[in-house]
Image 1 (cartoon, rainbow, N blue to C red):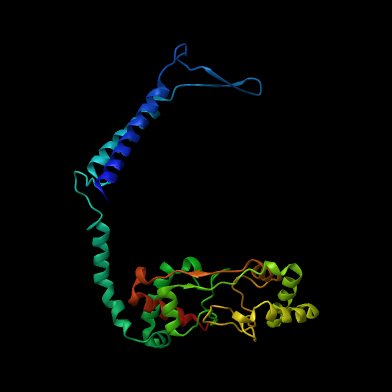
Image 2: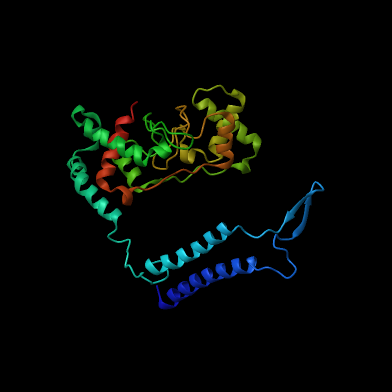
Length: 301
């Protein structure tokens, strides 16, 4: 940070503390003609209740002054104003957190490393590698359950990882890539321009693809729209999707956002776009390897 901006921050911080002190002194100052108990403000409720401009309680006033004193002492002792390092010389580098993390890495990294050379498919299936799957499960419960649930069955908008239905592929290398780099699908574009009638017919066709109850006449017209509206570009002529694009299979009766007619209509009309965040920097290759092992072990449940 340049000397100018550092000085600007220091001056601004100091002026804010002074302004707070001046403001409380100004508001506490007794005005000419004002009684010791304060005056009526003029606000009246129900004909009898009146609001008084009473002075602040002394305990509150001294507490406020105490926070100002604390702010001054803190900013002198610790860094926080521009390039000022604080007279104690404290730094977030080499902190207690980093020391604790160093001890954790020294203890657990060798354990992660011993499984790094074993293929994901082998660790996910062989009984002797149960410990590796348990480690992957603990990592999952720490970093992944917030979206996919503690049982990995997902939620609306978050994929079920136990059903062997994959938007971007279920091979070990696909799972590793999804966790490492994340996924941002090209998205389901909005088709509101088609109008309610065509969207309703497309919905009936989509319902019919998975063998669900549908209006057959409307579904037939929807089949033609499926091609003319460009749906085949992502979902394919057979509507079985495209993992390279993250386009779902519409024939398997598995629904990421819900399969009710109203939900399908909403997906067609407004579009959908899911994002899986990247975990490469957060976890590193060895932890991602074990996470992929656990996810792969779930995929046939």
